[in-house]
Structures are given as C-alpha cells and as structure tokens.
Length: 275
Image (cartoon, rainbow, N blue to C red; front, side, top):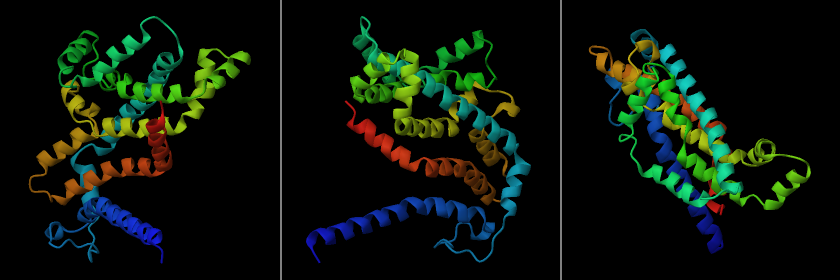
C-alpha cells in the first residue's frame, strides 16, 4: 500500500473520530432527555438506554408556554434573516459596484462598527426604542438586527469577485442596478447567502440578552428566556425536563444546518477566496 494511500486512510480516520467527538454531546443531550432522572447522570452514560421516559417532553409544554415562545423566536429569527440579507445585499452591492466619493473611507468607518461591543450599544438602543415606543414589542428585537456589518463585509468581498463583464452584459440588456443585483448577483451568491443565513439564524435563535432587556410581557418572550424560566422554576421537577427543553430548542438549528450544509461549506469557501 502506498504512503499516500495510508495517509489518506489516516486522514479519514481522524475525520471520523472528530465527527464522533462533535456529535457525542448532542447524542448525550438527547439520551439524557428521555431517560428516568436516576439514570440522567450515570457514569458511564447509558448510550443505549433500556428504559425511555417521554413524559419529560410533555412537562416542558406544561411548565412554560413553550409553543408560543418558539413561535416568537421563529418570527424574530425569520424577520432578521430575510431582512438583514436584503439590506446587506443592497449595501454590499453599493460598496462593491457603485462609484461615489469617499466610498472606501466610508466602508472603513463602517467596518469599525464591528469593533464596538454590543453591550456598549445597549443603552443608546434602549433609549431609541423607548422614544419610538417599540419597547416590549417584537420590533425591538429584529429592528436592530437588520444592519449586519459582517454580512455586508462578506457580501461585498464576494460581489467584488464577480467579473465586471457579467455586470456589463446586464447593462447591455438594459438592466439597472436593482435588476442586476436581484436577478444576477444574488442567484450567483446563493452559497454565501446560505452561510450568512445560518450564522444569523443561530445568533438570534439563541439570543437571550436582547429579549431580557427589551421585553416585559411573558407572551412576547422568546425561547432562550423560556428555558431560563424553566430552569428557575423546575424546583422538585426532574432535571431531565430541562434537557428535554434544550433538545427541542437545539433540534431546529440542527435541521437547518443539515439542510444547508453543502451550501454553507461552499459559501465559506467562496468567501475565503474572494478578493
């Protein structure tokens, strides 16, 4: 057997081992959520449990308004993903293709915003939301998220990698800037948009800070806040109920990742080779 083939086998073996290490916490989380409490923290873990207890999932819905909080999270996450990708695409196209005085300087100043911690912006944002009468509304969660500096940066780099001849051909066909963006550039950027979508979705699906600051009503709370309230009130309830709740929160993200995995990998690769 040649040396290159042995190295190839060793590389594949290391990838399989790494994959098992990454999946093991998720498997342990799911198993812990369906076993009786006395077996939840057994050492070594019961990787193949002999007794399952699905009532843990039912108790999640009984202890907190889980369904409503999930819908709130879905609504906020969907609006931020769609809205921010739309805004970021238009801004990135302007920085990449339009010529106007001070474009590069403005972009550098714009990038500097990435270095400002989100906690520093909390008080000014809170004051603006109060004057706009948006406190305790879903808009207070998704409105600040429409401007994603990182998304604009990545899309600008990708748009700059698209040959100028493509844009000139669109001009010859009579396409304006908006038509060029939506009918040519965005279809060519599907992998990058998919990668950004999953990054943004993960951030806002797991966001606990903003809902706990801007929201008051329980009916508008998102699921990360609901999980914390479940943890605070579980008292004599089994700890495995919390694991069941966490499993229900993690599953949509895993499903989203599995659905766009190939696009995500391709998008990260494309942004890595963009000028």
